[in-house]
Length: 375
Image: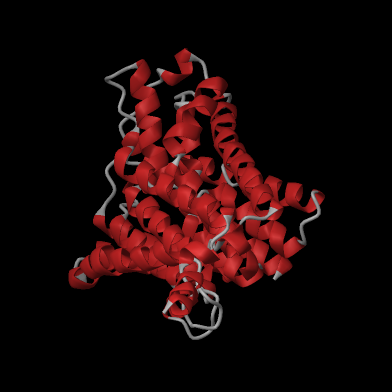
């Protein structure tokens, strides 16, 4: 009996664990805490945080339990990440949730979404300079778009061995938008600029709203065909929303579909952070580059808005440039928060949604361009 008891003890997670597992479990608990207590993207951080706990329970290899074992349940669920299935479904839901009218009412603000993509390409060059392979550098650079599904999609195609650290980095920075962006925005703008009020946008007709997803899809995907899976689903979801006659499908896309996929995506991405795979110098480098990419993207949008003001009679609030990253709608909310800290009666949210939405489109196009070059 004593021998059996000793064998039982040797098979427990306590006996199999090393310090790395406990480090990752602590990180998972921090994610859960930030999601629940601080309300930092709880729909992302709670599933990812619990997934980190799931992925860092030590188990015997060969029992079919670990996410990297071929016949495990977690491995089958994780195939939605590695095959690139989950991100387009997320984009379908985003399209069905999003009103593009703010962007159509003032197309000029789309330039801010394009400018913010500088973070992607500058970080790509920086990662190359640090010795990452071109495919790895492209996957790391896309973190600058602050778009988790796009980062996962591109990494699954170009550098699947980096999905864990890149996905966690991308979603971490998306969740920390209210912490990371305001200092950069305040540093690059004066109080006078932050007080600028925007003109009321024109009213967009229903016909424009229906035509845009069709025309936008054709233009964007002819420009960057590799972005077809993401942008095709984004514009299709928006067409379902705007055409009215397919409201049941739009309702399913923006509720049950996106909610189910978010659960599976968050849990499996978190579980992919097994300590022996995740805790490496390379992962630390990816987190540092990801933070740099996100900071550059925010700064690029704000600086470009200031440059635009040199040529515009009706000035735009440069805070809107920070919404050019594709963390929808969090970056737009941060613009509203920073603007109202200076003037409680200045309402920038509606205007910020224009560069925010165009940032989603821009990051997907950026991913398509990188894939076509290094894929």
